[in-house]
Length: 322
Image 1 (tube, rainbow, N blue to C red):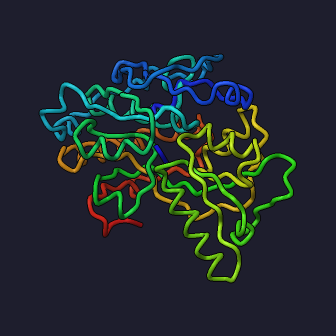
Image 2 (image 1 turned 30 degrees about the horizontal axis):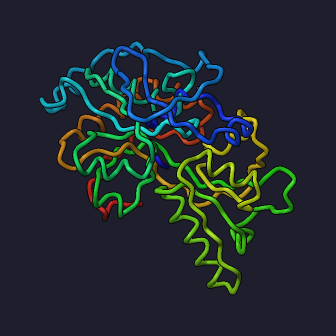
């Protein structure tokens, strides 16, 4: 889920704004004592801010046992690659990075006792290559866990999210079951695991003697949405959290469909060579235990996806893919 994620603050997109200027990727910033922002992409998006969504601290203290797990090279800070165009996971609101992921990262940083610097990128699909090259230490851009990704990066798991489907308001297309997708054009974001999801559905359609999906990829979330609104695609696909949020809070004519496909484990990705996984995993467990994690998911309407401490895992090998 693509994945800087910084996705805040960027203002909630209205279709008119998207049509007029496309999606302008904004530089990421995250307020708070333990996280900091840095410019990483050109342009910025304006719009009204939602100050009630901005959290500058969770008032958590560093946990000594977890601090000891942080490798020395990260004591001065952790660089987090983010993509700031995926509400409610991460987006820009009035110039401030907000969303589920920034809130989780802020809580993690306080428990770790280490600053996390959010660095924005222009495209989601650049994050893993940049991680492999050593540009970032982690990326909290809501990645779905796959075997292919585990060959390149490690994961600390956060929750499960399924793929949801939307149609333009008033469309004759309805998606109540998987086979309802067969024969339709469908838009997904480039570099996202949703491509694998819809391609699997397409193969099932063909195997059942129905027409495959016409899968179209777009560089960002706004372009994907605009394609649906303009009639270039029949259906749009993304995470159930993001699609529901867009339909409820953004001025876009999208109807979320009944069918949810294959919930996938989501997580923060880490460099395989960094040695930060054990500490980050312990910090995730800690924020679940102290109740901060539940507060964050409730704030963004994702309580139903919440993990228990036993579900949090550090994944380091492709064989561990769900």
